[in-house]
Amino acid sequence: MNMAEDLDILWSGQDTNGIECQISQRQWQEHVAKRPEIDEALELTKAAMRTAGSAEPDRRRPADEAGRYFRLLRVSGQGRWSRHVLVVSVKCVRQDDDRWIKFYQSCWYERRKEDL
Image 1 (cartoon, rainbow, N blue to C red):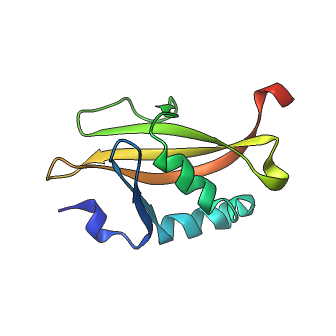
Image 2: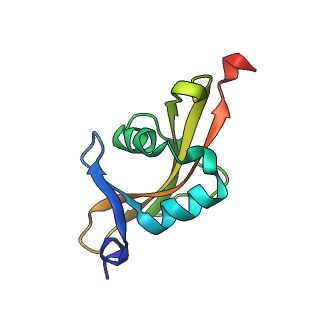
């Protein structure tokens, strides 16, 4: 079964490498309930997910496997968050048809290192 078919999709797009990206409505709403400050960060989250080059391994998650890996994406904050970066956690999963899909997991703001 394809995981993408089971999700209530809030947004779907592609990154610069052609990998499909998805944010589920449920995942986003549950996360905003926990972190209200990211309520206005949906467009930044999409921008981070569309950019393939800014990924780094998420060391807090399981090690890479043949069909799944976790990455952290970073994008500069805007407006009142301009002294921060938005960190977006994603899980990339190979589907039964060998396509990869980048699924939104979580996001949060961190202060820019030069502002510490």
